[in-house]
Structures are given as C-alpha cells and as structure tokens.
Length: 152
Ligand SMILES: [Zn+2]
Figure 1: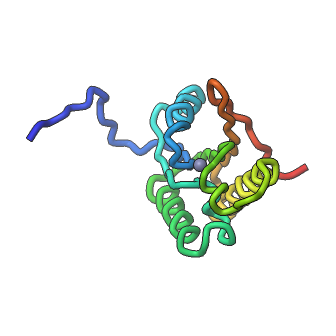
Figure 2: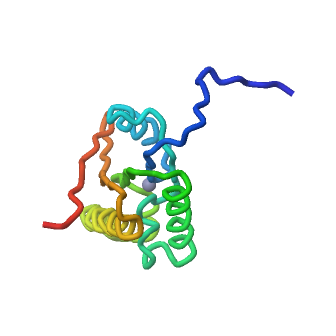
C-alpha cells in the first residue's frame, strides 16, 4: 500500500470560519481563494449540491433541509465557529433541477432570498455568529458579489 504524506503541517486547533457552498467543483478553488484573501487560511466546510438552498425546506424537502441544519449547527457549536460565509452561484444545477422552466432572473431572485433566509436561520440559532452572503458569477474567472443580509 502506498502512502502519501501532505506537506501542509497539521494544526490541531479548529478554524473559526465555516464556508457553506454548492458542491460544484468549478467554483471550489475560487471560493477558497476568496476566503484566503479574507484572512481565512483554513476553514470548515459544508458542501452539498445547492449549498444554502438546502435551508429552504420547500425547495429541498424536509430531510435534506434537516440534515444541513443539523450538520451546520453541529460544526458551529462543536468547533466554536465564529463566522460563516454562505455562497450561491449563477447557473446552479440544483436550482435548475428544482425550478425547471424558470428564467435565470427568477432563479437568481430565489437564490438571493434563500441566502438571506439561511443567514437569518443561522443568526437566530447562534446569536453571536457573523454571517456573510455571497453570490458567485462565472465568466473567464469567478466574481463574488456580497449580498446584503436584508432585502431593500
Ligand atoms: Zn450549484
């Protein structure tokens, strides 16, 4: 059996930042790049298809929504997470599948609503948590637009 030894030193302390985003690997490196730029060299992650969409029980269904709520809260409490970054992205396959025949603008609207709702949920459950919302758009590179926590 072959063994691979990573060069990165293992740090026993848990990161204070959790990033929650869609599994879509076309965005993963860019999400990590943004987080590094913001000073978070290491992060806990929750990645599932749709990411923050799963907090929307009507869109995701009870079991998927329950799973992400429990998983996220487990990390926040168990690892003493202080900050959470939530990411939605343009062209998300999860939304295309759950909202067939909807135009991209309507889907984008729903994604922003879902980001805000997920933020509200997390801040209500964990009062000292700082939550930041991002909407990612891909062209030749990926741009991240910060979404305000409240509409209007
Ligand atoms: Zn996606």
